[in-house]
Image 1: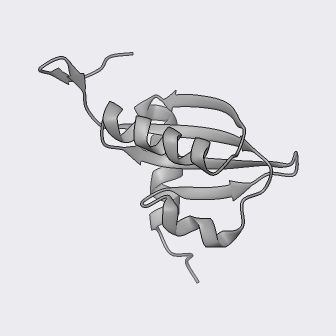
Image 2 (image 1 turned 135 degrees about the vertical axis):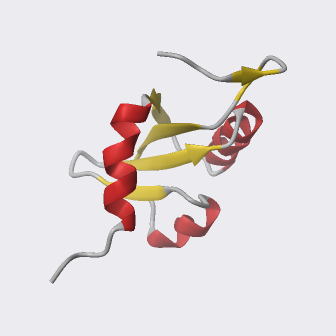
Length: 94
């Protein structure tokens, strides 16, 4: 995996954050440009682009302040992120 770096700071990446419990749709506004997906296992996945490490820390702080348990944080490779990203932006045909 390669990362682009300028001035010692990583640039944008796509992340998948798994949280314990199901977040209600009203929380969507808190996670700008990200998707919230509830899974049958009782977790919520927050996924999408994060501008930089400072934005990631702010996002994790927001989750902490909400009192929600963080189960995992995964930075997705561009190959993993691309199919999810492209499907989310194409309207269904028909």
